[in-house]
Image 1 (tube, rainbow, N blue to C red):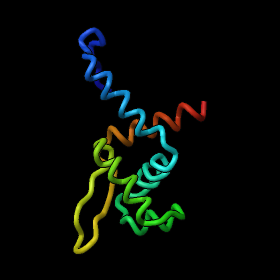
Image 2 (cartoon, helix red, strand yellow):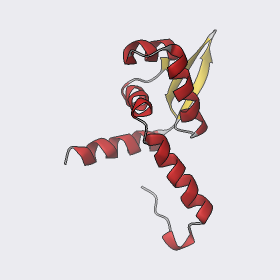
Image 3 (tube, rainbow, N blue to C red):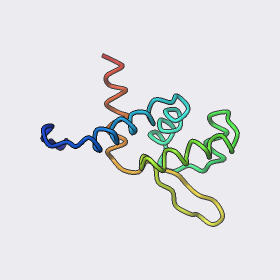
Length: 102
């Protein structure tokens, strides 16, 4: 894991970090992230079915997760497939689960 000099972190970076953790503070978004943690790629419809939610509700949460750069999407014909943005997101989720199991 990378290191950083906490003395050089700006107020804006602290604000952005707080906003990132706010994004993780919603149980619906955590459910979506966990589903993506366990699956390579998934469509909105598949997420909605597996989480017993409407496509509209899932789409709203996906938009927030995408704006926070936690997930990414790619087009596959007429549908979009979603996945975790990078290994950092996988690490954050994994560390959270590890922390809870201690």
